[in-house]
Image 1 (tube, protein in one colour):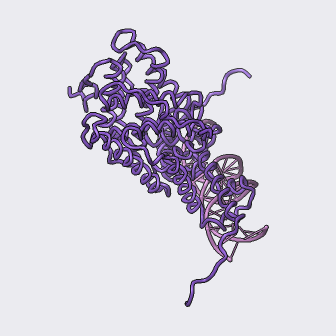
Image 2 (cartoon, rainbow over the protein chains, first blue to last red):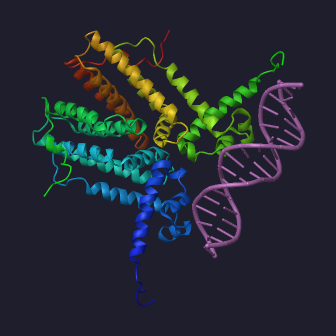
Image 3 (cartoon, helix red, strand yellow):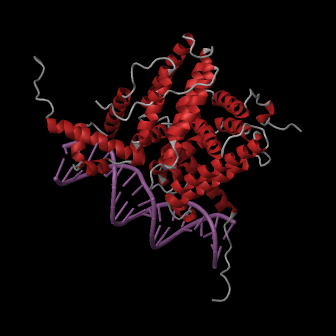
Length: 219
Length: 219
DNA sequence: GTCTATAAACGGATAGAC
DNA sequence: GTCTATCCGTTTATAGAC
């Protein structure tokens, strides 16, 4: 009734366990899907009992929400906020390069996206929202590029279509890579990106080498 | 020892039930995935008991194989065998148009493809093989187009990359459509196809209206 | 008499509650 | 950490359809 109850909050070990659970759940969901992955698998992978998962998350759906939230935060953090206009799209190559080193990430995105095509899937609103945000950001940058004269005059509908096509190609080529890891997603997508931006610009463009962030900024 | 045993073979009702089970299984697997869909759901959808499924298929995996085999046969039957060279790629628009009327087909392809990114998935060999066959057919036609002078001189690696990109875009845009049914897959992909073929040809092309088979050949 | 479907039940795994 | 009700894929024994 009176004051809010004072709690000690989670211990550091608790937070670490929570992070481990989320990481493991991402792996399991990526491999077996949300429906196919079980809380027992995840618990066994972390090295705890299923009951421990219940302490950190309300239920399986709550764990999925935590996985999606964590994944979204990580991928957002990798988007350079300084990219504007056309240069934004060059940065997509960095995403492809990064994904090539993190197969689990691609599996999670594509497995959940396909699963979320079911209208009753719990992750559907999140996946839908995420796609719309990604598309909206791309539309924003391409519109900026058009207004700055970087590319030809495309109407708004054309811009939306172009951005959707770009991310469609990116998803599709990564799906092919999951099924056939020998294909070079970066080289193939770079080919597509070069052609696309050239078409937008109206003349052949050359994607600057620094579009790919260096392996590591050696201090 | 002597002759092979004489059996009566399946009745017509049995064959019909078998077809209904496959159709229903395709729906269920498309919606919930192979791992997430249950034989009980399928049986309930058909209106039989789970045991009836066991009479027609060895096990769940056998049912999946039957679904894939049936799906493959149907989609193959829709590919016009007369398409050669560049005209082959115009026919892809017909596939997009058809898929727009059969959401379950797209769900099945994409759900199983994503699920089959797991190396242990029972459908993985089939899905892998199917992709390779589709790509190989495309490579064949684009190579034919190059040798006939329909398009610029692309080397073999470029041809493979181009065909992979085309189908990547097709898959990706249909994935977006599953998550947001308001987008016009046909219009958007047509935009991509026009740009792609124009780039291949080296000059702007116009996709002939008859690339889309008429609604019905009115006799 | 073969084919088809059933009802009932199996061992096992599940999510969630206590 | 254990328990429970539920659902899973699969296997029986059995009744009916062709």
